[in-house]
Length: 618
Picture 1 (cartoon, rainbow, N blue to C red):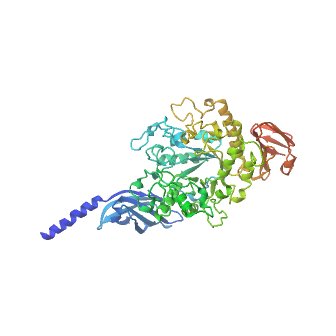
Picture 2: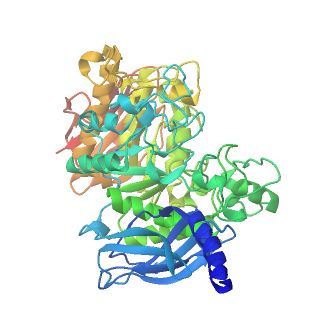
Picture 3: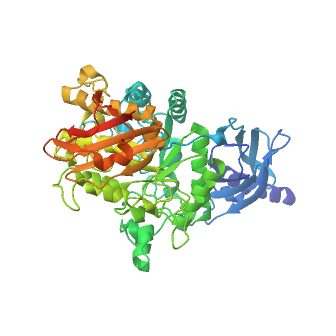
């Protein structure tokens, strides 16, 4: 009797303990065979999950090997190191969690087979033209997901900083519009879950790295969007955020370890001085504040030096590339995380996808400081970011000034010339993204004081200079920020994207004459660029601007295109003998915007604040 009582006393606590153990999630949610890197690290989360013994059970003949089970400070986490050799077969593997040889919970983990040829996919490049979309503000294709009860913020179009209801279906419903405009790649601001109380529409406060926000749609909806885009011969670029997550992220309620995020005694913001990373004279204090300071009070700063978080983020990128067949990644605030980890991330991605492309947001004003972040830059400190592409913020800054000021020694269109003259800083100046505006800055029309002529000058330059052009949704129809100048207003709704809209700017009938004029201008340039390899990969030669006239040539093989920009408030007639090193081979030209034939190239008359794009002909 005494022995039986002892057994019962033993069984009751064990039973209660085993019932407390609860498996809540495993990430990545599934994986694939066939990667060059055979290692896979799973994050396991659940109540007291670290108090279990982990095993693998499968009918697969060549199943993954469980190399190690790693514990961290929080007993609710485990990290499982698996090895998927070249012989590992696709199928399901049961991950068991046992206490005293009794399985208390398990997870059926799927190993998928990679799509043949996925490793050889080509990323976006200078042959593309990128169309940037803020999904909440582009089009609402499914009104049923606007006010989901299990998410904090509901749609409210009256709130400029609130959610308006745009979604993945809204994008897929208007792929014809984007393609007909002439864009070949689509960059969408973050679509991952942002379950924040307010101001969540922008997508930069991630609360789940493996889940599309249900207000945008589902993971399957995103996959299907990628399929539709690829069927059209277009490309998809995913916006990712590694510097910070949202304060509502599920792990913020129960961090794996105290060093998962950068912790301060009180809220400490970043200095936002990205140039401090490359500054050879930077103080330790400034360097530390920039990298470890929080971007915002609702954006906890991630500590990418934590080895488990580093693996988590690297695998997350590879997971989305493989899952959706991505053609590129745009990495938000690229210099803000620890740069050593970002270099490892870039190397890991390119190891699996050698022809993939990643563009980093390196928001600095000087070519040298931006060039530091491009892959294979000749940096004095030996740093190699493994980041193939960067945004040309110095050129953006010059574009915002060049057409707004009088011509002078260092003002006007010479600003564009001077920035391009510093391309020697870049390891690969042809793989740079060029833009006049985006989701973080005032609409270009506003910066040019509503002068459409200047918008056309900028569009001409962006679509004919070196690099990959990017257009912000609505710029082609003259969307404006207006007097408000806030982020919520510059990311305004595209007219016609909502069922209740009385104006539909997706159609020529729904646009005003001015809007159609700008749309047609943009479409003409985009489609011409799409058809001309010389504007995609041709060499660039420009001449020092004189008297407000900036002329440059793109040339490749037997093709040459001359671009003329007149920044004056009056028409200019110029003799062209100065440009004979190019023009002497040609007798005439076709101005592609107007379709006008230019039978005599010795003199050109260019109207005030306008441009010529001339295809030279023998």
